[in-house]
Every structure is written in structure tokens, then in C-alpha cells.
Amino acid sequence: MLAALILALISTAPHARQSSSPTKGGITSIEPASLKEWLTYIASDELEGRSTFSEGLGLAAGYISAHLAQWGVKPAGDRGTYLQVVRVLGIRSTSRASVTVDVNGQSRTFKDGEAITFPKNMGGRQTITGDQIQFAGYGLTLPGGEIDDYAKVDPKGKVVVWIGPQGPKTSASGLFRLLNSTARSRSALEKGALAVIAPVGGGFGGRGRGTAPAAPAAAAQPGGGRRGAPDDGDFTTVQRYDTKVPPAVTAEDEFFEFLFSGSEVKYAALKQKAANQEPLTPFALKGVKITFTVDADYTVVRTRFTHNVVGIVEGSDAKLKDSYVLYGAHYDHVGYSEGAGGAGRGGSNAAGTYDRINNGADDDGSGTVALMALARAFALGPRPKRSMLFVWHAGEEQALFGSRYHADYPVVPIEKMMAQINLDMVGRNRNDDPKQANTILVVGSDRISTELHNLNEDANASLTKPLTLDYEMNDPADSESIYTRSDHYSYAAKGIPIVFFFSGLHPDYHQPGDEVSKIIFEKIQRVAQLAYETGRRVANLDHAPVRDNKGPRVGKTVTGKLKG
Image (tube, rainbow, N blue to C red; front, side):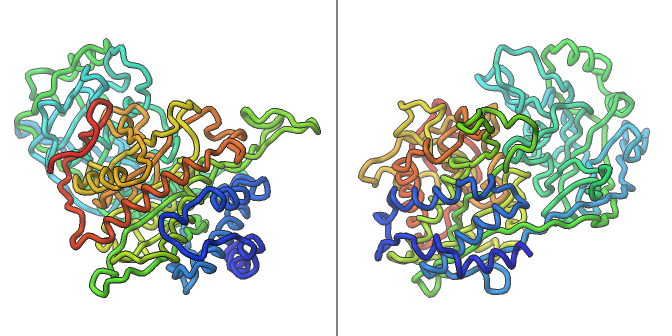
């Protein structure tokens, strides 16, 4: 029913018919007046905060789609529409998984649930054996160089083991995301670990802005039925749940005691040091072999639908137009408060009622309308050689639902995606600081492709009024883990070079105060123009941006272009 409503809105939406549109596109068509017009509707109370499965999000999808049709953007969704159905599945998992450990010829097998625990979404059936076992201490890289457990350790191709859920004693603050078990295990996997073994009870379970799970290919969400509610199963996912992923398990003392039984340093001593938050020195476990048997049956017990909005502006080059530059933003938000007495910082109005609606003007209404401006600019202006793919993702706030789904079920072949440019919260200053007016945070640009990073630097320098590019949150020790918390990460996990533009958090983040009246439309304009120029340059390259995968290098102290 929701899809039918959206399709009807595409042809009837009065907002689209009355929209002001420049007769020409290009970078100069990105201007504040249109951005404000579109955002006034997208972030209006009528859309009730655009939560993932709501009518309000459907209204937003219809509004965006209507404009795309008006500008002549080609539909790229299902059945010739602008809508890609995103299937959100509740999965019941039945495990037969196990871990077999061989220590100097002595062998023990631990079944799932018996001193070892696999995630419910453990992926497809496989058997993985590793004979290089690396104890990585706390498994941490902390800001300021205080602790780097990987400084002298290369985890690539090894089974990584870490302990100490509370982390070491440190003077650094704001480390709750880095100390999270999921973040530490994910870090090892991103560094090329064959598998990860972590202690139980390793941190908080919340997702924040769509924090990714340890295994990049699985979007986990705690499930279980509730009285009077549908059975959500053991986990919720939008991805291919039978895809093989590196094992990431948690273990109890019994397992660790046997694992370290042949080592010079026994587990009891390591556990005591971890309890005292003392330094833990990494070392290799000799004479140890571990075999992971991943084996589970999955049953879909619940299905919900939401929609990505997708459109294409075809390229001008006959040979290159079947490759794409992907632009993205998320058009969902967190809805409205259902609790008594209003929500957060809403406060009361003249009528004595509370503002319950989290309008999401900046998060991510700003990125949503910037993406609309980019689609119009390319549709009505000069066409670059490659095609431009625009995706308004649903469910970013739920666990990157829309982008995870599109990365697994892309509307164009994923190997044809040259780069992904993501805009999320680009309409205000960080902490509402006027000194940040000329600044945009750039995250991830150097991690997969140095060439893409340098293209973005050159694109910014070419603008009439260049922005200040701040790489602080690209630092590998960023305690907020921003790199993993928005839609670009779903594509980066597939190896696609990304650039993430983000203007920073502020007191109205996920609050009713995130309203249109506080948006700086000139800032959205300038960030969108930078995104336009970067994407245009990628689209006109005669080759794909080189994927050298050198990881994060720019950060708090390193900025500017990099040598290849």
C-alpha cells in the first residue's frame, strides 16, 4: 500500500509541480533558494520525522521522485520506477557451529553456546583453519599514541585474539566507541584478520548512527518476540545472510584457559593484568591451530518493506557511460516521540503542547536536498563521460538498512561503481560554532584510493571560494568512529572508494530542535558544489580511481594532498 501511495504522489505531488527550476543545470544551478524550498517540505511536521517504515518517509519518497521525473532523471528502481524495495528480514537462526582448538597435539571442540558463542548472523557455511594465532592485547589503537596493539603486529591472514573488555588505564576521554567489543573486532577484520576471538561482555550494544557489526557483511539487530508483537527472529538484516564472512566469536574463561595452555604466559596471568587494566603485550601463540566450523540454518520469520529512491543521469561517452559515480544521502530520520510529556529538548509551544517531532532538517534533510540539487545539476547541465547514480537511502538510522541492501542488491553492477560520495548532515556548523562556517569534515577519502583523495583536494581548490577540509574524524583513533556510522561504509566494505562530507554534530542532533530555521543554506550549497566538482572529475577520468588501499593517513595533524 505504501508503494502505491508513493507512485501516486510522483504524478500528483503539488510541491513538485510548483517547484522552481533553473532552465540550465551545472554547478551554478545549486543555489540556496531551491534548497530551502525543498527542505521546508522534507523537514516539515507533515512528514512526522520520516521514520523508516512510516507514511512520512513515503511522502518524502514521492516528493523526491516527482522532482526527478520533472528534471528528466532516469528511473533506476523496480519495475521502471524510482523506488527500490528494501526488504528488512527477521531471521531465526539454528546453529551447529563449533570451534576446534589444537594445542601442541591436544585437541578440544567447543560447540556454539559452550564456552564459545557465534553471532546469530554468522553467515554462510564454511570451514576456516588458521595456524597463525596472534594475541593482540586489548586489540586497541587509542588516540595520542598511548596504546597501539597493532604497532608491531600484522593481523593479516591470522586469527586475532584480544581480551580486556574494560580496556587499559588511559587519560584519554570519549573512548566508549573504541572500547566497544564490536569496534575492536571489526578493526581486526578490517586489517585483514582471518577471524577474531573476543571476550564476552565487551561493551555496549547500541548502534548510534548505524554502527556496523563486527562482520561487515551482516547487519545485526537484537531480536526476539515481544508479547503482542510480531516475532522478529534472532536478528534483523537487509543483506545476503548466507554470504560467507570472517568468523567473529566471543569466548569464556574455559576456552581461553585451553587456548593459552601451551603458552609461556598463561591466561590467568593475562586475565589478572586485564582486570587491573595493566599493559598487555601482544605475542604469537606457538603450536596452536584453530578450526572454525560455521554452520547454521536460517528461517525468515518476518518481512518489512521500505524503499530507496534511485535515479540515473546517463553519461555522454559511449564507452564509459556503463560505469558510475554514486552519490548518496539518507532521507529517513528518527520519527517522533511517543512518550508522555514530549521529547528531549522539544519544549512547549504557545498552546502548551510539546514538540514531539524530530524534523531532521540537518540529519539528513540537508544531504537529501543537496542530492536533489546535484541530480538537477547533472540532469539539466553538461553531462560528464560516466553516468551518475543517485541513491536516497532509507533506514540509515536503523542500521544502514538502505545502503547495506543496495550494496548487496545494487541497481547497477557493483564492479561498475567507480566511487561513492556521501552527504550526511551538511547544513550547520559543528557545535553551532560560527568559526566552523567555512569548514567541512571529510572522512574516508584516502582509505581506499589515494587518487580519489587528491581529486577531492583539487576539486576544492578549483572552487571560487574553497572550503576548509577538516580530516580530524578520519583519524584512525577517532573515538566517534564516524567512518563506520553512515551509508558510505556499506560501499567501502565492498572496496568502493568513498568520500564522506559531514559538517559535525550539534546540540539538536536527534532532537526536535533540528529544524529548518537553523539551517545554513549557503553551507549546503558550497558542500554540494564541492561534491559536484569531485564527482564530475571522477566521471571524466579515463580510468577508475586507483584502489591502493593504504588506509587512513590524513587526520588531526596531517592534511592536504598525499603522495601515491
